[in-house]
Length: 325
Ligand code: ACO
Image (cartoon, rainbow, N blue to C red; front, side, top):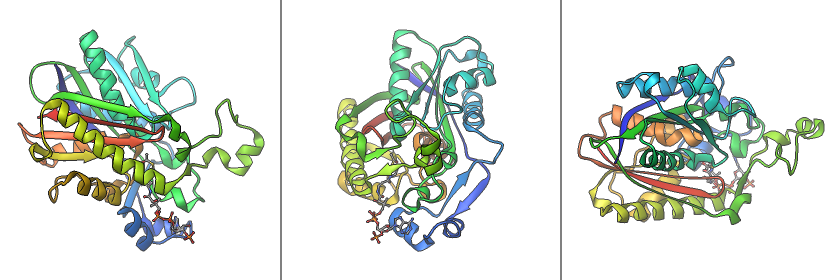
């Protein structure tokens, strides 16, 4: 049995509105709102980096669990925007929190599905070797993408979310997680410069290729709707529930139109899908844990409720988790 012991989240103070973006690139509040539902997002301060966001969310989750750093037995950080290239953000986080010598590692590169995938890894680790696992989703995208490419820059925001999961019979229970990958679609969403195939050079840096996120927006949209809906249905089948039994679906917050299309496909009631993309934009692997933390804090979830998380991301990955509160 895997219990969720605590929830946490953090967003930087600086608000970046659509009108702010319209002063930088050729865009408008009307275009961004109509296409994505995003009105504003948060951007990290100059002196903040990924570790700071992750640590803030982690501290909230550990406190919420009624634990201290020494009670954490393992750390998994899902991020595509790490503190440094190597070592991983989890190593920095372990030291910052004071969780000495415990295994700590990143789940990197799986985009916005990373946090739900990490939950799956955490519950397997707990089943094999009971311990409290801190799972963090964190993204500081504003610093690593191009501020000139209007097709992508307006979509994203910075933030972090976290949970502590551990062995336990009480609620909330992480009932099940499903996950999948279609590696034939690596090209629909990729930042391909900087690896061994195409290493950093002075020329790539000068051309901004290292910040150039290539996205086939329509294909990502189509895959996202199909895969997230299927993952919700699959995890519900595993736990013997139906969509009518679900109090809240917490989808990855990439785009309001994607969330609406998933809602239509699954036959969701009005308000059955949680939405905060208007306030935070797409915060990558932070989006699901941030939304989960907010939903619980806002009283949208109470004891006994069945909640389903679902996400998609570059890879192309998808995942869903069922939680009984
Ligand atoms: N402001 C104004 N105009 C813009 C902007 C902008 N920020 N960005 C693109 N445009 C223009 C395009 O250049 C194009 O102009 P053209 O017709 O003269 O060529 C026009 O708007 C229409 O562009 P489309 O790509 O057809 O717009 P579409 O309706 O497909 O919406 C969007 C684009 C919002 C990206 C959509 O495809 C989408 O939501 N895709 C899903 C992708 C997504 O959410 N990705 C998130 C990151 S991935 C993740 O979370 C894992």
